[in-house]
Image 1 (tube, helix red, strand yellow):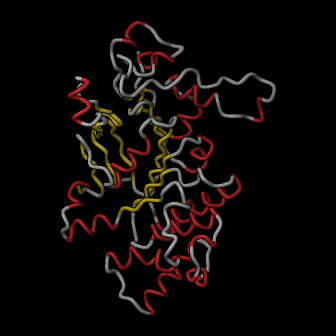
Image 2 (image 1 turned 180 degrees about the horizontal axis):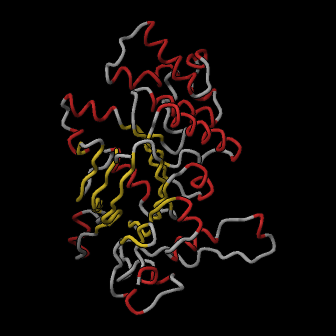
Image 3 (image 1 turned 135 degrees about the vertical axis):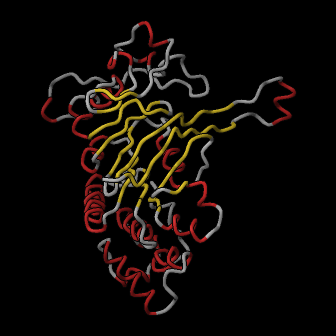
Length: 328
């Protein structure tokens, strides 16, 4: 399989300094938050790569960098051979590339315009990219898209508030598919839904991927959801990928202590009565990260190099791991 999506040493830094006058009066320097640091991965066509980790680890920032909502501080996001920075230039080639990439957001209650009918919401990308002129042909296409997500053409006459959370997320998926994309970034698309509805939406997404040959970047903190939908898994901690590899390998035999810690915290019916290992400690302040490996204050396998030297992501035992203990 060929790589549709490539991230090459992508970093994103935000200036979170106090206002200039406050800094002058209080004699404080500028403050920078390194939200994402040197993240690299490929996603093959038709594949689902999931990024997991605790809140604040940089997953959603990676999603927004990939879709072009944020511009990278350093590094490249390349989709189908084109640099995403070029997608903001307004050329025909840039618009054609942007059509290939769409995003499904976390909250279906906030991502849909409450003043628009569903048919207009789904038709918006088609009108924006001038794919089909207004009229019967556009109405037919909107009805087809609603049918793909198990809704009806009559649902297009309603407003978002008339639907449940799961139905709203189906509308969001229909809107994302309207421009005939090849790549979808899914930023925790089921976290705001009930568990039973989550399963329906995930199964719908898998069916659509199989039928349409879609490629997914799936962001989640729920490892059970990830196990259901992903082909490969990347584990993030404090803005960096610490382990990435095939789903079965990462879940079956994790090499990084942080991955093991996340998996040990998942409830398991087969281990009823056994003590569970909670995720120990707190995520460090990203404005003042630890020296060396960022995970070393919480790591049960810490030894001498961990607090001095930052481990690099290296190939090891069929995957990539950034850990002195695993690769040493």
